Length: 328
Image (cartoon, rainbow, N blue to C red; front, side):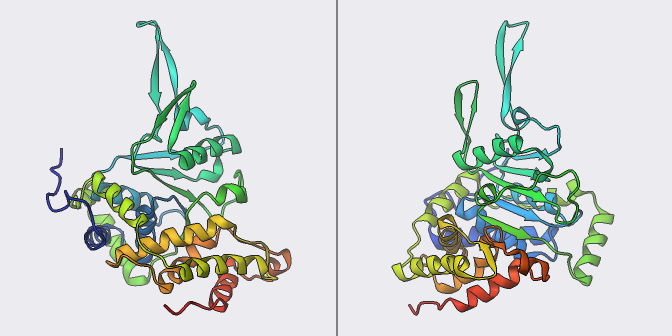
C-alpha cells in the first residue's frame, strides 16, 4: 500500500489545496496530452464535489484520464459499460442467495468506488440511467431496504458520443441538470496528436500510468472539498451568477433556460477555480471562466435557432458577455 505524503496530513488551506491540484494537473499532463483545459475542468469538478458529463468522439482518452486521475490520489476506480440490456442491479449491486451458507450475500456494484466511469450512459434505458443518477445525487445505495453510504470522495464521469445516435436513450433535461458540468473533448492539435501516438505506440497504457506519482491521499481530497465549500463569495457575485442564469431564460434563442441549480453550480465551480489558484475568495472571472461547461447542458435552443446551425455555446457566449460583471 502506498505511503501517504506527510506534508498534507493537517487540515488543508486554499494554498495547500492549490499545490495539490497543480501537482495532480502536472502528473495528468504526462499521459493526457493536449487537453489541459479539459483536465483543469475535471479537477475543478472534483474539488467542487460534483459529477461530469464528458462528450467527445471515441478514442480521445476519456478512460485514460479517469484512470490517471484515480492514480494520482490513490483512489479506487470503477467502470460501467452501459448497454441496452444493462439492469439497475448491474450498477448498484444485489443480494445473491448462497446455498452453502443458506443466507443472502451482498454483491456490491461498481458504484462503490471513488471515481466511476459511466461509459456511453445514453446507451442504457431510462430505468438504468435513473439508478445511477439517484446514486450521484444521494451518495448512497439502497439494496433490499438496506441503505449504504458511499465512501467519499465519489465522482461520476459519464461519457456520451455526440455523433452516433442509433440505439441510444438521450438523457432528459431534468437528469442532465444533475451533472455539475458538461465538458466537451475535441481532437488535439497536430503536434499533441503526434506526441500521443508516439507515446501510445511505445508503451502499454498500464506502463504509462504506473509512472504517475501519488500526489496525495483520498482524505486530502475530501479535506480540500470541504475547504472549497468555505471559500468566500460576496453577495454581488451571487447576484452575478443568478443574473447569468436568468439571462438564459430571457433569451429569445433559448426555449429552456437554466434553473436555480445552474446558479448554484456556477458558485460551486467558481469556488473550486479560486482554490486551484490559491485564493479563498471568488472573483467575477472565476464565474465567467466556468460558465460554458456549467450551463451548456442546462440550456435548450429554440427549433428555429437550432435549424439555423447555431450551437448552444455560441448563444451562451453572447449571453455571458451581455451580463455585466460586478466591480469588487
